[in-house]
Length: 143
Image (cartoon, rainbow, N blue to C red; front, side):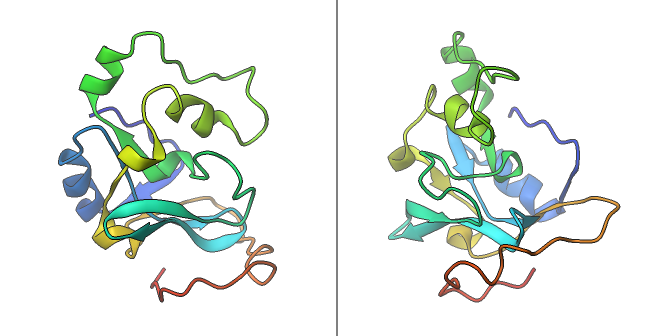
């Protein structure tokens, strides 16, 4: 499993879920994008969209803390790179994931993306500026 964490908190339950990743798995992230959480929208076990506070039109509108990639996928795609430069702002995750998977292949974790098991952590006041600006999620999630 390939996972890089800098400013995120992963609960022990998220670690267990990551271990079952076959290719690329996804889950909600708390305290991100100016919202209480962002998450993949899931219907019938498949990702169908994104509940996000910023640019829902991105191919993979997901935060870096919201996915894991199997090491086998990394080894099978040696030309896939995570660009530190050359991506538009906020597009690094999408630019990387487009090289290795499709939205249809994503594996929803955390009870079909209805449980927050990962949070952004910072030593500053939480900014929820985008929370009231966008539609409310139809799923009630504890953050």
